[in-house]
Image (tube, rainbow, N blue to C red; front, side, top):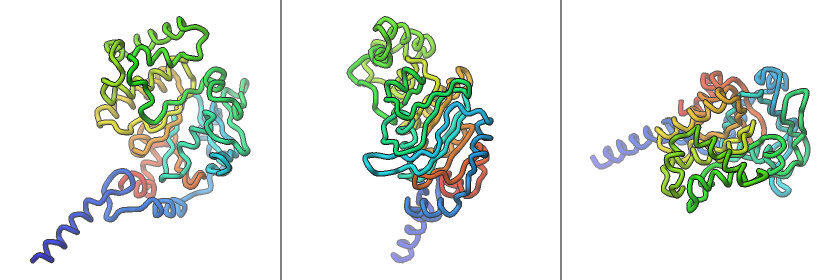
Length: 298
């Protein structure tokens, strides 16, 4: 009888075993297995397909990029294209190089070869070797960090002022902060509160809003849903949707909640071991059974 009970418990545990990041599957899939199986379904992705997904008019373009940290190469001849006002979600197993793409665009990695270009075809900037400050000032690229980037002992207002640290005068930073407060009443009501007392969703809103102080054109968003309750996740994605479709921001996102990210994004890239494995429209990847099995819990 005890053996039968143990077997039942084991079966129950097996049924409840989690897949990669979300959803239930029959057995746990290790990161190594996900990497191997992602390689197995990888496709040849011609540059023409990337261009078509970006409406043949890329605003952000990465060409044959090799990049990494120190002497370690993480990205291998990576190509990427996103049109102005589009959104791209990067998914893949741990160690695939997703955040390294954001880091490379913003200037946090060593670039061994290749290029990163920003802007319309008639006014394209090669930003490959610019510093993060130069990329924010000259190319309008802002990075919204993964988590806990606010200054907890500063007020909400002071945190926003910090977002304008590259502006010519503190007055301009304050004026920009007021424009953010006018847009987000939730923050305006808490302008004098210490940031550490905000809810998780409010802190994420503050992180996004601080990046908006410099009025960037390109937003690099690292794990917008990380550590948030479902109601706050919906709020954050509604904010990002407004920034894309209401203000024309171009968004490149890393999101471990692959289903949520692909539901949001116009384009999805699946990465593995620093290379592009699959590229397609977000809704097409949601319908791809292999992507679903490996990343969507389906």
